[in-house]
Structure formats: C-alpha cells, structure tokens
Image 1 (cartoon, rainbow, N blue to C red):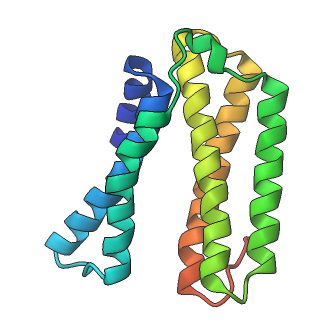
Image 2: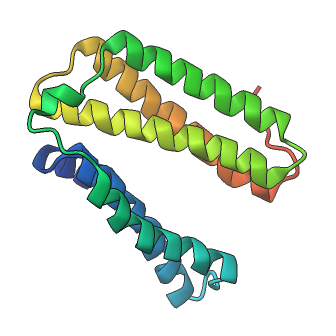
Length: 167
C-alpha cells in the first residue's frame, strides 16, 4: 500500500513517461533483495532479464518524446474503456490458448497486467492534474483491479500446469 501511495505521489510530481518506466527498475531491486535474503538465487535467466532492464531503461527514457502540455497525452474515457476491454479479453484468450505452455500463458497474462497498470497510472496522473472525469477514474480503478488479477494469474501460470480462474 505504501508503494502504491508513493507511486501515485511520483505521478503527481513527475511526468508519466518518466515515472512509469522507472517503476520497472523495482524488478531488479526485488531480484537483488531476494538473492541477498537467501530466498531466491539469481539464475542466469534472471540475470539476463535484469541486465535487459538495466540497459533498456536508459535507452527507452532517451527516446521517449516529452510533451510540453500534459493534457496532450490524455485519452478519451471511452477509448480507455475500450482499450481495457480489448486488453483483458486478449490476455485471457491468449492465456487460455497457451495454457499447455505455462511460460507463454504467463507472458500473456503479464502483458495484460502491465498494460492495465499503465492505464491506471495514466488515470492517476490525469486525476492529479485535474483532467480526469469520474468515468475515467472508474476505468482506472477497474484497470487496477483487473491488473492485479492478471498479475496473479501470470505468477500462478508458471507454478501450475494450467492457471485456474475463480468460478
């Protein structure tokens, strides 16, 4: 909860195109903390992934166009709602299609979760700037809840042969 509150505060203090990619760096810190506490060893695959984040983050930040007017990056409420629906349906369909390939199913769910979290951050930023309507806030909160559910399915997809949806 503290991390989420700090993320929202960062969105209010800095541009979305800077805050959102920097959030990815927490994955590297989590990997290092897990290894330091002895909970999880750093595998070669994890080290390569962390290296990609460390190298890719500055590259992404260097090519992102920064808009002088924050309102230029905002999307209409109905487009955000439509995007959320497409993301969720695509992630679930892909995850179910590839359920026999756990890593691919997990990647589908993770992409859906990451996109939902990005939409939530965009909504937070718009609300912080006073540009969000009540329907945009509802879409943002829905995206947060759906993102959490998709992230849970992504993490359980690799642990189990087939991810299970609540009935």
